[in-house]
Image (cartoon, rainbow, N blue to C red):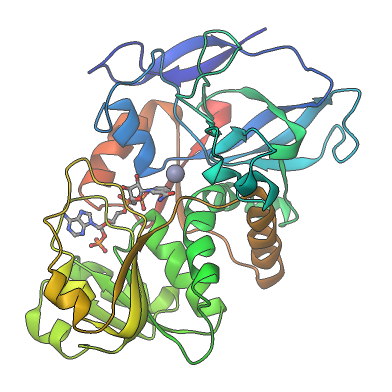
Length: 348
Ligand code: NAP
Ligand code: ZN
């Protein structure tokens, strides 16, 4: 079957209305009518070729919320009408060590991303959530229990939420821990909300003076304007953990210096150009670590969704029409969004 979508048909082309194929529903498949799809900075990096070669047509979108319209004969966990989500992955080998641990994002045989990944389905690569409908293997579909009125604001949890939740949990962020969140964009604003909900002392680092009050409203205990050397210095050697979501290359030493003994700076932002090499002196001077983290597994994504539903946590969003996606990209590049654009897929 073919469905309406927004995608780029070639390099250096804007996203535009196109028609794409979707596979028929197989035994283990769930067919989903997409209501909302968040816009992640990864969509922009990908479709504009900042991370290397891209397969066209390119239909981004991996923060998907919708309703089940059909299930395969072997599917028992979902039925028509269920509200569900799909995040950054739609498949993995499911038998390697990471997959068995529920960490499919680190599949040793390569997980299948929701867009721009190889697949046997036409046209040979996956096509994401800027579309009317998607067909996904049941084990990669998430249950959504938030109130129906919140669904647009739930969509960003499927990437921005889990990408910050997974490292916060892995590094045991909670009461008694001082935690920094760097870059208050789509990922960062979720990082602040989740770290706060987990009970940590949260410090938001932003380059935007205009986000100071907003970051406090999100749940930050303190806000630091990261361009201000004196404000940075005041927090020297004090953090257990810092999560860095910045989408552009920058000096990491400014943040590693703020870690206390054995502290970790975890990078989740994936800039087009490499960061300047960090100083070894700063790292050895406190047995500090720089680490990285990729989205999160399906099991922990469900845990995060359930935690957020229980605590009433959603993303702060600006709902847009599909014909505003390119404008949204430009505003995202200027850090001009509080804090996530979400597409109303009925406008496709
Ligand atoms: P976003 O909404 O654009 O937020 C990025 C934030 O970084 C901006 O709002 C801004 O915050 C800050 N920033 C931007 N340019 C900066 C600069 N030159 N110097 C310092 N700070 C700057 O992007 P996002 O959707 O949150 O994604 C962030 C990054 O994470 C992207 O690279 C994306 O591809 C990546 N990502 C990674 C994963 C993963 O699994 N690891 C998953 C999803 C996304 P302030 O205004 O507060 O300074
Ligand atoms: Zn994303």
